[in-house]
Image (cartoon, rainbow, N blue to C red; front, side):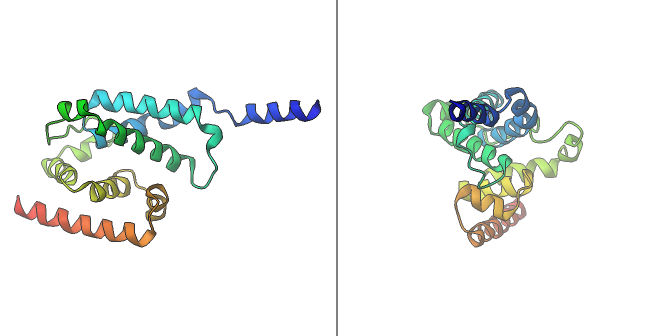
Amino acid sequence: MFFIFQTVQDVEKNEPDIKELICKYSKDVTRLCYMILKDVHLADEASWDTLYKVYKSYNNFRGDSSEKTWVTQIAINICKNYMRKSSYREIVNSEYISLEYVSDDEALAEYKSQDSVELLNAVYNLPEKYNQVILLRYYKEMSVSEISKMLKEKNNTISVRIKRALALLKESLKEE
């Protein structure tokens, strides 16, 4: 009897507080989803889906990586699922991105220059494997090891992708 009570108590300890999850991750997840999906409404929907999935599957979190990395991976997977839908292709036909969700309001002034808009649009024109590592490395400020764990690739692979992406960006910005 004591063993069963202790197990139930342990399960309750592992259950996260939904309010805490929302406060901790909602802004970052929404920004990431927006940077991937390029649509405000889809980003909001994807961020809520992400937080719901994190809440429901929190007991499956093994601790192999940080909680932030785990939440980010869930957000990326949900965004990829959204991008597979045919309705997504109909909604997102523009190559232009707004800077509304890219950064905090305080830091938004840094991103408002025309050069920053061109750079961000150039990042979105990269192939997905390069686009993804640039967004995670420079906009989400994740380390190479965190990105490699998230994408289930070797550190060297991620480093090479970042270097190639930077070279592609440099070339595309020279052409403009």
